[in-house]
Image (cartoon, rainbow, N blue to C red):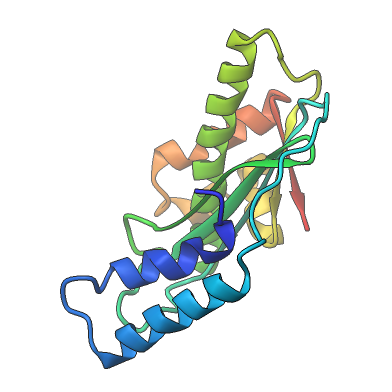
Amino acid sequence: MTRPDISFAVNKLCQYMHARTDVHWKAIKWLLRYLASAISYGLFVTHNPSCHIQYYTNSDWGDCNDDPRSINGDAIYLGCNLVSWDAKKQPTVARLYIGSEYKSLENGMAEVFWIQSLLTELDLSPSVPAILWCDNIGAIYFTSNHIFHARTKHIELDYHTIRKKVGSGQLQAHCH
């Protein structure tokens, strides 16, 4: 739980847990050797009064030879502390790279709003909107530009919820 540096590797290896080969076994041994050499690595939480939330995301576009579905990777910071991270496959195959990145932003929005609701219950409401960081400028444009809608009919309608949140000022989306 405190080692986001290995979360993708563990996720990938778990996919072959019931049908592993020598290649997978070598990868497991490599991962164990890495852990032994990086024993002092991990998450460190520091005191920070900021409740500013930032969400960083990246997505491949079907780069895996085993499965055409895209893989999302994301990290959520509260102030300067990493509080949530994830790496998982998208449930559907994205037709376009931009669709993969946009879906990743949509997943992040849901996680960000869950964290914001938790902070609100603890009377620690953030005073500024959360920021979503994505490396795809097209996906960022989709969050606020309704003109592209005709070209994105293949993206499920519930993915466009993020547009409403950006339009209302509840979120900000930026390219990094």
